[in-house]
Image (cartoon, rainbow, N blue to C red):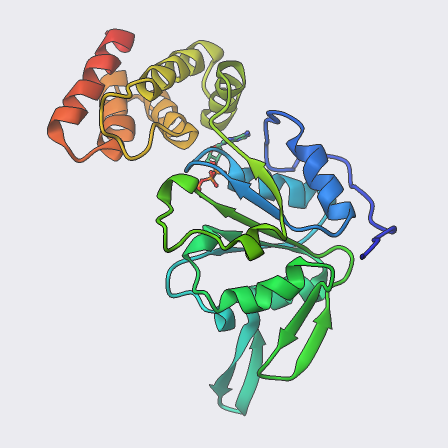
Length: 271
Ligand SMILES: Nc1ncnc2c1ncn2[C@@H]1O[C@H](COP(=O)(O)OP(=O)(O)OP(=O)(O)O)[C@@H](O)[C@H]1O
């Protein structure tokens, strides 16, 4: 097992991306990094997964390489490929290789979307070997102590075919994220939208009421991200109703009846 003794945690600096802690997630992440363990974060859209990783990278003083995974993303997109230029053929590292060389964090967002061949490169990096084998150049890279693999996915989007294989899941320390409790979400909205506490509280109260509307067939509930958008639009002069229609109701549903029902809740809160 890799025992990276020389790793030190850099204290928060004022320019770190703002992150409102919700539990022991920072300590857990730090411990995982100290022990050379990869981390899996699961949670719904817009609940703070990316912001958390950005914050932690800053706090630990590590370069961060973020990859938004999609169903065409292959191992070569992560590792690198040969390119042809004026001087002939040359090798270009992919984001995973760069993170390994520099001892930084590679964050794979929505990892379950990526093609299955990515597991071949991720598995040896995510277990005790901490090794990246670059097949096309024959290079075998041993990850330095600072390197950390972080992946995330939204359990709500998963279909049976795309679920993560147990052999992959069981290489990670896993953390579950969800939308923040009321007081924390108010602080986040006030800070991110630069609005006063009263408006942030009103928007969050509405968001929480919308999340309770279970009878409507919504694919996802209102995210913290959408509440921040709404508060920003109100701050810049839109009426609360216009802002809620554009930033909450319409992004949540394509069905006009559902949008109307969501707006009824808005009217109760801002009427
Ligand atoms: N705990 C938090 N502290 C600070 N900001 C937060 C927090 N949670 C959410 N946010 C805010 O919500 C926005 C959306 O969060 P983020 O982009 O991290 O979501 P995500 O979970 O990565 O979503 P997706 O799965 O769609 O990529 C952030 O830009 C940030 O403004």
